[in-house]
Image (cartoon, rainbow, N blue to C red):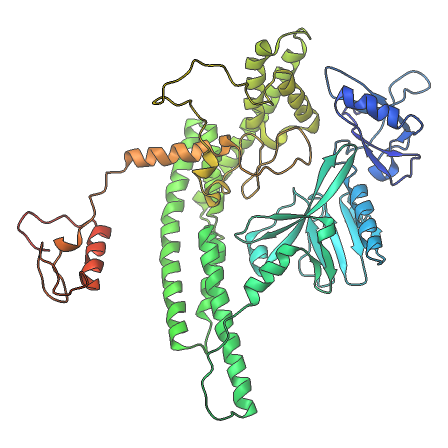
Length: 569
């Protein structure tokens, strides 16, 4: 059996069965202070970390990441340990248990906290928290699929655990958990994710536990927005009998349900969720017992949604044709972008041809990522052979090539490679903003070039449909700080590398589109009300008739040719 040479970043204090986790600093200067602070402590490859239970020591390096290491065996040979999880997030289940226990203790409550292992799942994948209200199951990874139909258990999802849009719409919201590194510890953050809303994050102390389950300030806002309804208009009259009151309450419930469906349909169309729109159209068509005005709204919404679905079918066919051509031409980046768009417009009844095109595209992307992973290994090996005192500007071109190749490799890279890339970025000064250069004084007409803020040019609903080539955040996920961590912090704005392709594609479409004709002026059309012709004002004293304004807008929308001089429209 070969020894696992991945670097160990976490340990437990005191003994092999300890539940007190510890995170080792990555930098040498921080490790010196860490050693002084824990000079009387012992570090162990904890059993609850999936470790072997042996004692660990710290390894200090100035040219690579510091880490824990096992003591050699009695024969001087390296110790063999079968521990799988070794990175920064490998002790997160212990931090979650400690934080949850302190949270309940501060509220004078008790809770049973255990590391569940259903179907042989690895310890650390799940944390079950059972209180007097209900049970929370924290999914820190994707080893066990969340169960949404268990009324007694509420899933809380880690950053890497996906949730489909249908579940978000049906449940209104789901909770997520994130752990941020603070020195040699990890701090728990709770997020609330809702359909068509950004995830809002809160400190654990701001959350509460109710009969409904875990609650955050965002939950209260979502529930108010979903359940509030306008008060019915009151009209004087004689008192009604009880059955009439019950019938009126039932009618209000039906009206409220109809408005909820209309709002959900609008939300689903905003994010182009074809499957959800199709399902909601069927549900709306079954609604009965509403007012004539509401029934007309429902019918119009369904008709418009079905026209939109037909358009999406044509869009999907065009995307698939482009995707097939991109695979044939070997344009990997375009294949990756188009495949993301095709998956967003997924439908349950794909044809055999569509299945073939999508399958070949997925195989192409996977093959390209595997090749990129091999190139990353080769580039790292080349960098290790360079002199250690090589200047940062000499390193920069090779490290930039490494970063670009790592983006192509995506999630196939292991944690060790990610940490190594982060170290080389630091050595090449690529993780710091470029220093401002001194320039000659400029005239008032000239202004220094400023980097455009791309996140202000692309709406969230557009870039959330794509993946990020820099931090490898997938579709529907926020960009994260690409510092090599397994559980990095979420960025406030997406990376420019995620936004630039969208802007480039938009500019290309604008260049290829014919220039629209100028809009029609109001007095270029004949007024339907007073019959005044072109260049003649309406007979009113308050400006043109509304119908004349609407006709000018309609002619502009239809791009109707403008009239010849002297002609009327």
